[in-house]
Image 1: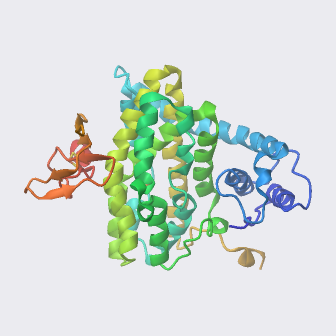
Image 2 (image 1 turned 90 degrees about the vertical axis):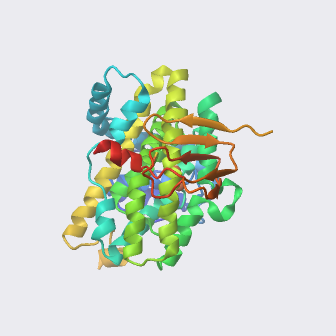
Length: 332
Length: 61
Ligand code: FES
Ligand SMILES: [Fe+2]
Ligand SMILES: [Fe+2]
């Protein structure tokens, strides 16, 4: 993957610096949410598979890390503010039942906008493809952000996370790695399965979903949020995936698209229990102080996803594309 | 000998570790292909013997 197109002054300066054409931006000042999320996404990607046009040594460049920290401070504060209400509500409803699984379930069941019913019954094939393109930013590295939690855990939650990730990563069979199943789905839907190929088209709220996972995954102090995010993700997957699969069948997008979602109906019906009971609850048993962060991560998963879904549905209902226009069309 | 562990989730499926094969209600054998499987206990799953989370819909209605 090559560096994506910047979306503002911060991104432009950052991309130039990574190409060796100028200094690393001294502050996190940015134009708007697009500029912020794309810049953060670039900084995080250096820790995953990186860019073919950026030397690997940039990953640990102190000035880049300083810039990332400046952006993360604002992003984390915004997430905490966005999530406080839902977390408090779940805590109050869970009330006497002090177990974290109940609170997680209440967060996962929050009544928020979702794409699954629309894709199930209403979406056109073109809209479904837009959904696959936007989702590819995550699903081509599906479950990788949560793997950062492994070295930060010990004992029961670590063993359970390894069980879950072993399944996500194909159980020893490369053709069954979920990332590969998604790549197969993209190919069959007539899309590009190359890692990162649709980043430029991906709107800011979807990048924010991805950036939150990286924020939680890369910071040891946020390990609670990392596994809480995983739990909410898994707890809100099985039933929607059934609708996604049926929508793909309705639109005849091909067996690989159906198979990807079909696999998640079954897999995530297991994963949700591993994540909530065996990872999150055991971690909170070990370290009760992490409870608040576990719920924060869960709420962030639900609410940032809901924000992205709302923006997508708004666009579709107005007959517009939910994706960003390619660069050529923007300047034209 | 391999140990088979079964953990019942209240209101949900049974999480089974260490099994090779699980039979569905009609007696057909289904090979286990993941480290942990969720076996439907509510009887409502459309992909027996595996849980497909339908129990949540039933409980919520
Ligand atoms: S126990 Fe989950 S569908 Fe039956
Ligand atoms: Fe998966
Ligand atoms: Fe999963």
